[in-house]
Length: 273
Image (cartoon, rainbow, N blue to C red; front, top):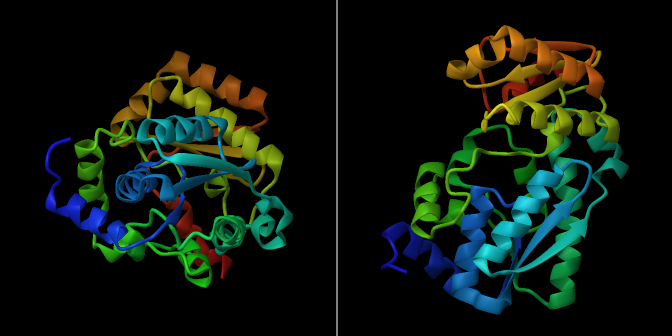
């Protein structure tokens, strides 16, 4: 490996001050950079932990396992039960708080079992400017965010990921499936599976960065980058996607002409308050 860049060295130095850690690991670029830094600095004293639940697409779980193996970090998968939490199922604007609280409860138990010094997550500097109730759950559980503490933003961490040859360095963000369900619409295993299957249909068209949002009344709202809208508007593809999503269980299939917007459902938050 070449000499580390200033940003990656700063991150490594951060971990060098620890005895051990648990990494809340999704397999996305953020937590992968954190896991790699932890592994380089702490070796077998770093453990990555990934949640398994209906909220996590099977594809994402498999990617997390593959990335952990590529990093060489010890990896554990823990089954979480966020669907047993009424606040999560109700799906108000604080849903992510209940999801992360469930995850961090499990990580706290694992931390106690291994007498690990600290739990860390992959939140980066850019996450501070968005609606992130999960950050409150992290603070409540004394979870630290090394990327924020090192003032590393999304652009910089992607450069670090590429520097370290992480296979997900350019992977689009892939938040949990519940983030696709409109606020105020109850989260159920069936709806999570519908979203997972629908996104697989769209992804199979070669569109890496996209969302299928679930709205009241079994309505699917497909978001793709503006320059990819024409792909889905093609008559044959449009008819095929509509037929496949109807087979999955959607009654209405729509294409958002505004294009892909990360966190677009946050526009509904004031309506819910």
